Image (cartoon, rainbow, N blue to C red; front, side, top):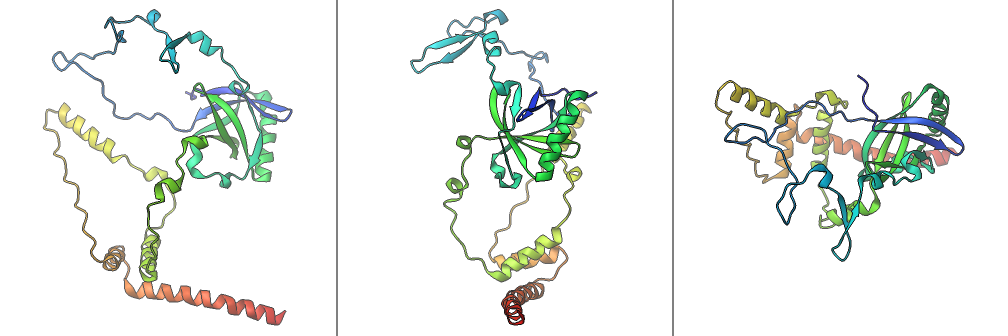
Length: 292
């Protein structure tokens, strides 16, 4: 069964328009979820809206949305009045500008969606826009109304389709300096840095998302199976106690040894190789100038 589109509308580049659909990249895969039960009867419970003053329950027809103004008064807004609010980006994404995708800081990237042509008539225009962006190695900036909020988005080619990623507004993002400002500038020891780099080299691998496992989900399933079989819940394993690092250099050497490498010798070799490379560059440049 094809996934249900999250949005249908039009993609526009100047006077070129094509109908498109957005599909969530992230699937809602089956995972452990719990319902609230009445402990005494075992029956499921449901939530009911009640009047905050009278305590009386409300029916669906009694509910209405309200916006609280600065005076504490509520302005009543009907659901159909909200549905009637439409702006251009409710149904059309106009490509307003183009940027190098790498110029967008990761902290601004939010939710990804696949973009596909909505019908056969739109496939040619869709392909032209996609291939033009691919040829220029650029990503398009646009706006779209999703879930009753206008969001800035970036669109880029992806295989036969495109990828749209919603962006966060600047005033909703904490800048790194506001969090990292108290971190002291530390001059690290080159030999210790070389050891850490060797450990990284040992652990280097290709990105493979299929290896990601939700071990917490597995533990919940183990608990559920035990309870269903009438067994006691598995005892919680005590978390390993972090060792107090007294000597960082020794800890790095031990870490490298545990990864199958030798410590100080390799670090010194790596450091010498780096130093030799740095020393060789100016001489190389000087040789080139003489020969010129």
